Image (cartoon, rainbow, N blue to C red; front, side):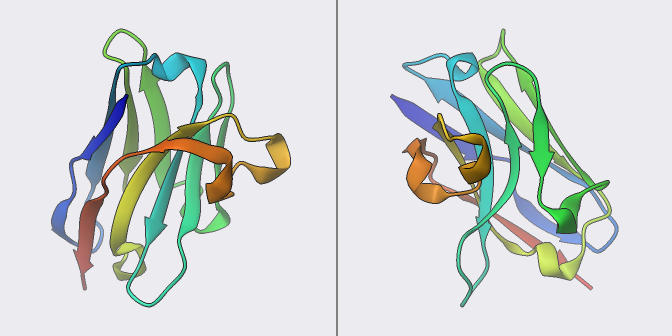
Length: 123
């Protein structure tokens, strides 16, 4: 069972990046998938979540800029990040779990984690 996050890099403010979270050993569609991020000196925070069925959720700071989606055939979840800001700079992690609705951004609710991919946004 493995999650592989990829797609990070160095971009300028206002640009876009698409992160991928590919699963092996299990079906992503059977789990809720969360994207989290952790900036230096800060706690890990939930960014976006997609339910195993329908439903997507975003933390307020990324609403209207980020879009989470799932490609069942590729067993991959994506996070399209547009209009990036310097404060989006962080290591981004994907995770699979079955969190209850009020805890979808609680790290302890997730079973499997990817290794993280760095996103750096310069001003």
